[in-house]
Length: 305
Image (cartoon, rainbow, N blue to C red; front, side, top):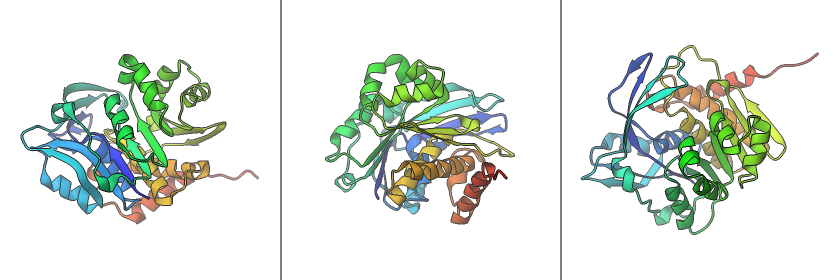
């Protein structure tokens, strides 16, 4: 089934203990659509870039089957830019520079060919834009997934809750789950957050895996211990792209299928961190993906005699 992703397409400049980059292509929508392309063939993007954005990257997205009709190019503007430096633990980072540029006045336009989307992924961005997308769709998609961040919890909590009330699945990290719910226990936090509207909640715990909640059901997917982690930038978006891409490809939003989807999302995120930016997501084979998923299965498969 068709997937629509709305979010940032950007340049990143990243420094980690393993090295640093000049401007490389990033942004939530980039990671999500590239990842989802390995699962669903109807993969649409809405975003905005400036005249400085390389045509080669647009070509790459299209080669991966991403429909870029909704990617607006403003020739006289500059693309959204973010620069950050990761600490030695690779879990914390400092933002060195943020330049919204054309993303600062982004007004998402939904092409007619996107109006039939059954799966919608709202990447982290200004809350008003997320609500605008929901209002501009002629029909509500079968499944709407939302990513957000602690900034909106600090400065626009009521607006955030209004958007949350309209989605089926929310993804947050462990700190954000506690902040949004006011509860330290993830189980109680999940109940509080799901009472705000979404039937499904995913709490991402970085190198410690991810939790999936729906009603009274809970599923945990561990993270794969990797020999090398070069760059965690985009791992959360890659996870989301694998998760919703798998759901769209199977057109099954049962809890059992979401368990499979969260494993595929985690597997794709484990590829992402092995190189800087989105490099590792380019040119993956189905054999590589299947082998990585099998590694996840072996992590937690055992018998009791």
